[in-house]
Length: 247
Image (cartoon, rainbow, N blue to C red; front, side, top):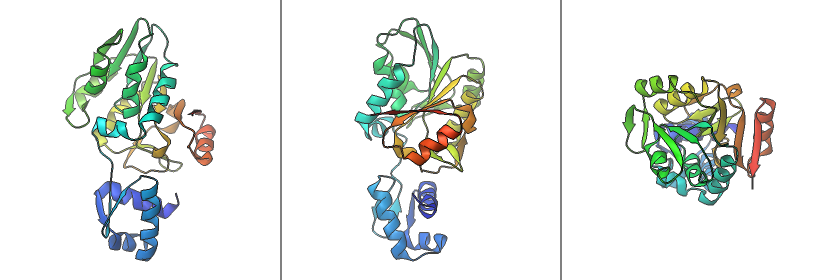
C-alpha cells in the first residue's frame, strides 16, 4: 500500500463514505488514479466500492468481524492459547481473534481470565477457568465496556499476559484503533507492564486509524498469519517485538 492509498483509507474510515471526486481533491490526483487505488484497496478487502463513492466495511459487531478470515483467526487463536500456562491470570481484550481463544482453554488448570468483553465472558462459560468481567459503560454493538470505571477496575487488577486486538499498523503510526474509548482501555492495559501480545490477522497491517495504541515498544509479541508483508515483519522486529507467523 502506497502513501496515497494510506491517506485514502484513513479518509474512508473516518468518514465511512466519501466520493471519488472529494478524494481526488484531497490527494491532488485525477479521479482515474483514485478509482485505480480504490480497486486495489477493494481487492484487498480494505473498503467497498459504490457508484462514485468509497465505503468503509469495518463494523464493531463481533460476530460479523469474526467471520472475516475465520479459518485463519482460528489458527491464530489456537497458537495464542499455547502460550497460556496453568495457574496464570491473563487479560483478554475484545478483538474477534481474541474471542476465539475461548474455545482453546479446555486443558488449562487454575486459569483466571480478566476481560472487558461480555461476548468473551459468555464464550468462557463452559471453560474450566475463573472469569472476571470488568465494569464500565457498555458498548452494545461491540459488547464491551469502556470509560473511567473500566480504567479504574483495570488499575486494580494484575495479570501476566494481555491479549490485545488492533485495527491498524504502519511504521509511522504504530498500532492504532478505530474507537477512542476502547483505545483508552488498551492503553491502560499496556501501561501496566505485563507481557502485551497483539493477536490479529495480517489484513490490519498497512491500515491507519485515529487512535494510537502503545507505544510500540510496550508490546512484546505479535501473532499474525504468514501473509504479513516482510516490510512490516522487519519493522516489528527492529522495534524489539517477537513476530510469530502462523500458517
